[in-house]
Length: 216
Image (cartoon, rainbow, N blue to C red; front, side):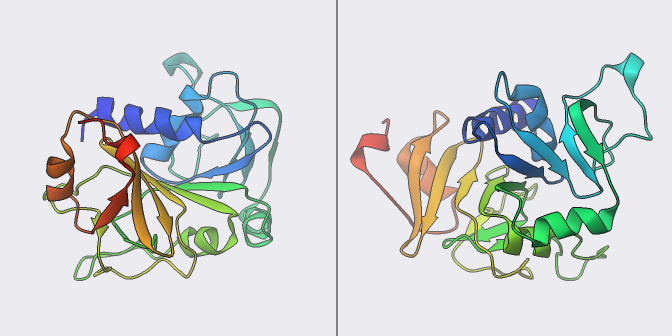
């Protein structure tokens, strides 16, 4: 998983965010997004109790008492607030998060997410994923296209435990952007030099597309 690919995904997700959005950032690739927002004015929320996260601090200004839910050092924008975890989940469960950006282990062709457990491996618990998929108004998945073992993340049917009933609106990988509808996954943008046939080969679910988005 190259840093270049992770940054590419984070930059593309940042394009989907709008001024005034309250955005929860999950573990992994989503933590890179604060560094690529440009002039956008969004409120970044962390489930451990921060609203108003800023970009990553430089090494001289790291304060490990000020971290995100991913345990990464963060900065605070002007007007930021810090509160306890229970208030954070009131915010999430109360429908006050406009966009949740999450990583996944798997996502099915209709946008159902599995991002907290692999059968047969030790787990820490579902964490905030179940609340976020249920409470956020919009869900964007930011993920590498394939797992470390080469298996596709986008699958026809989940084989890992679901994270809840809420479904993703969009999946952004280093190769493509998909949106999800009641009819399944739709390719809306290609982000790499893969041909359509090559993309289909590394994707574990069928997807539709308009001719206008196929670049080769």
